[in-house]
Length: 293
Image (cartoon, rainbow, N blue to C red; front, side):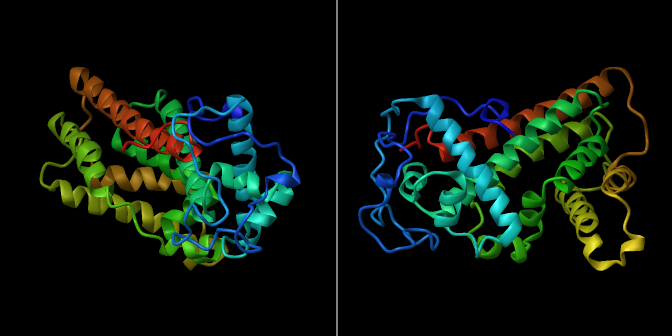
């Protein structure tokens, strides 16, 4: 996918972009492998210091190059796994100098975090687009989410903690803001659905989240555990996720009129909330938005 088709990344306003993609862009200091062993790598390990607020000379080229590097990183990690993919490998296949990558990200971990953030932003944008053609029930949202996860191996590996693909990234610290984001977005969304008669009122919000998560994780995990003849194709698997969600969590009645319209609005608002959040994080990872001080 080209940079033009990516989710809204904004215009670069962060990393310095003075160098060309030639061999002179390599780190002036540091080891042969350069920074890339994980969270312990600091900006002094061969990376040029970033200058927040200073735009690159060619913002469009800067962003296109960042996406090209991420495209390459995604191909390599699916082929070899995260632990076996080096910055040097990515640079060679992307046609840039190793040091050029450090103009965008200080460490290998930051680069792959950007890759996963881009996948989440693209997934959320596609779910939002497809949700326009549904009644907007919880089962519709879960079916769309499952379908997108099933066709995005990096996100499926991230969700399931697949160390064969993501290696050390599966042991990375979880975002400590996840609970706050869940409360800010998903909690009010579930409350709105319950208020308009879409969800079972005998379950607490925590029980709704537990059941919903169990359905999604269970259906995405089961293909690993069953003989191939018992595993449905991805399209059918997503349908089963939606059906199980509806049967387990929904009220069993069919809201009409104002309730049906409000349920659909609540679902679209929640997807918009998620989409803005993941796009914001992606912009930070791409250096197109300053990190708040």
